[in-house]
Length: 143
Image (cartoon, rainbow, N blue to C red):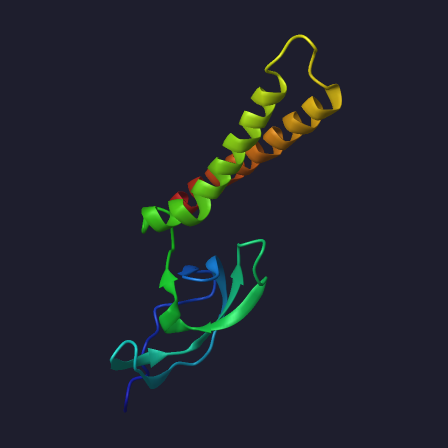
């Protein structure tokens, strides 16, 4: 009896895609053997339905398994995880912090109260995003 080829992706796995970024596997179709010219060999291939993290891309779609890289935890591939997830959050917070500093850079005339409150709120929300990232990373490490 022939054994079915195994694709190393399961529902709930974290994956990375060159265009869509990081996402979570929602469903994996039954694999089949396919020739992929760009990879130059036969291997198990299937359609993988993924929910993407990137807010400005598609919320979810299906891609071929060969186009994904498994990222089960930030420690498995730290550079890619940092580049796709941590760096944008950190950069957003730094920009928000600089905006607060620019708004508060003079004492005469005093800073515009409305601009200052908006800048402080933006910084607070950006920092909360960093905190959520840290909590998620701790949960992934514990799992």
